[in-house]
Image (tube, rainbow, N blue to C red; front, side, top):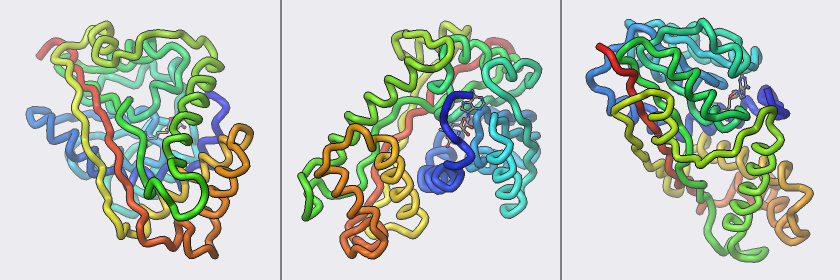
Length: 277
Ligand SMILES: C[S@@+](CC[C@H](N)C(=O)[O-])C[C@H]1O[C@@H](n2cnc3c(N)ncnc32)[C@H](O)[C@@H]1O
């Protein structure tokens, strides 16, 4: 696994997964002809999508697979809480994928970009499919908007600058991954190169207008905390101070208390089918 401390991000991943989660249902609605018997969620994290699939396909064996035992424990806890049937399996990608198939549906959300050789990862994921099975990969989409352009303090346009800094950080993260391979990140073309057919991409809007419920507010807090810590070395003093103010629980203009907070983003799911019946 790369250098992220995934277990430490459990709360953030769960809040974010929940805030985004209607898109999983919308994406699965695209697969009306699929009645999967075996489903794998590769890189499930705390299991938000896996539990949703377990609820949608109660007759299927759904397995959440991840490199972090702590996150898999969260997934199990979540499944118990929601009363759905979920198996878990610890595995490191890409090597640990061998032997997990065959599955009728393989879902992998925001994981492939954490593997050095993304085409190889897709080839291996496609290799887990039973004939006629579907691979669904969540990659791309749009960065989130959470706050007004002018917050009433600091320099306007903070989120645009954060996006640019996060994009640089992402680039460095990818370059430093073991076995990192540069390629054109054309996901549909990559799915076709993995031998899949009926390839298509669908994008789903995640739209939580103000006022947001608590869970969405927590998700926004988590994403801004990640910017504050992950970008500590590159933020200028003014933007650092603005983020500190936004993250101060006592500040009425902070994200815990301001009424104008929202969450607007888009998630793209790329589908491909393994030929066969
Ligand atoms: C960004 S999170 C995505 C979680 C979830 N799929 C979602 O969409 O919210 C990435 C997940 O992939 C797992 N992961 C990343 N790289 C991995 C690797 N090389 N081997 C195993 N798991 C890995 C992490 O533990 C984490 O749970």
